Every structure is written in C-alpha cells, then in structure tokens.
Image 1 (cartoon, rainbow, N blue to C red):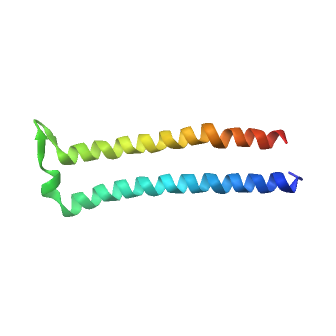
Image 2: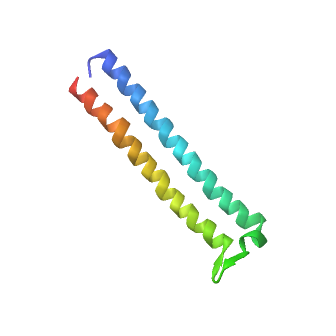
Length: 93
C-alpha cells in the first residue's frame, strides 16, 4: 500500500477493531469472573431455588453462556456493518 492516506486509514480501522474486540472481551471477563466470584463468596445466594429444579446459580450460569453468544453477535454485527465495508472501500482505493 503506497498511498500514505490509505495506510493511515487502515491503521485507524485496525485500532478501532482492536478497541471493539477489547471492550467486548473485557465485558465477557467481567461477566465470567463476576459469576466465579459469586460462586466463591456467596454460595447461599446461588443455591436459592427459583422453582422446581432451578436455582439462581443455574440461571446465572446459563446467562453467562447466553451473554457470550450475545457479545459474539454484537461483534459480528459491528464487523458486518462497519469493519467489512470499510475494508472493501480501502481495497478499492
């Protein structure tokens, strides 16, 4: 890439992708470690039954898994609507 403006635009795009990925990663880590800390320090809370065969801990565990899917979906949406079109645009220059 000999065009300095295109090279700068590509670097900015890569930096933005890094920020989005880091933000979503930190969100997932906070959710996961929050759940692990609850397991470690508040077992009675997680042991509370919400219904027949369903405890608060099981619900939170399922929500941790669902949050991973949601955060992955957010990244896919962002890449499809922002990142990929910009990469195609830069390739065309």
